[in-house]
Amino acid sequence: MLIEDCPKPTRSEQTRQKLIQAALEVIGAQGYELATTRMLTAHAGVNLAAIPYHFASKEELYRAAAEFLAGRLKTDQAAPLQALRLATEQHGGTEALIEAVIAFMLSMARNILSGELPQSWVQFFLRSQADPADATGQIFRQALQPGRQQVRAAVALICGGEADSLPVRALAFSLFHQAFYFRLAEPVLLQHLAQQTLSAEVQEQLLTTLTQGLRAQLQAAARY
Image (cartoon, rainbow, N blue to C red):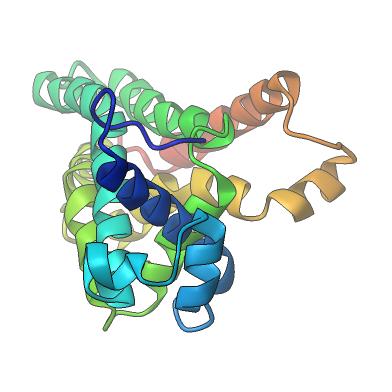
C-alpha cells in the first residue's frame, strides 16, 4: 500500500513518504526501540542519511508517521461520526440510537478488516497507546477523541447514565475498540476460524457476528 498525498510528488517528497510508510510498518511490527534507523532506511529503500536529512531524528520520523496515520483515522471517521452526532442530537428513541452506534462501529470495523489499514499500522497505533508517557500516543488520542466522546454520549443516552461515569466509559471503550483487535490478532483469528485469509466472505461473517454482539451489549445496558 502506497501513501497517497499530492499528485506527482517531488523526489524529496517521495523519499519522505517511503520513510513514513517504513516507520508505520517496521515500528508497528518491531516497536520503536527495536526499529533501528538502518532497518527503517533499508525497508524504505533509501540511504542512512535520509532520516536526519528529512526528519532530523528517528523520533521525529516516528512522530510524522503518527501524524499521518492519525490524519487518516480522522478522515475515515469523519462522515460516520457526523451521522452518529446527528442521531444523538435528534435522539429518535433507544433502538434508533443503538442502530446509529452500531453503524458507526461497523464503518470502522469494515475499514480495518478490509486491509485498508494494514495490520502493522494497527499495531503501530496500539503500541503508542500502551505507554501513557509516549508523547506520540497523544497524537492518536487527540485524533480519536471526538469519536470516543460521541460514542460515550450516545451510550449514556442509551443507558440513562452519565457520560463520565465508569460503566458508560467502560462500555463505550469496549464498543469502540473491538474491531481493532480482530485485525491485531489476525494470525490467531485465522487459525481459530480455520481460514487462510480474511476473504470478503469471512469479513462479512465477522461483521455479522460483531453486529450481533454490539446490539446485544447495548440492548442489555439500555434503559427503555
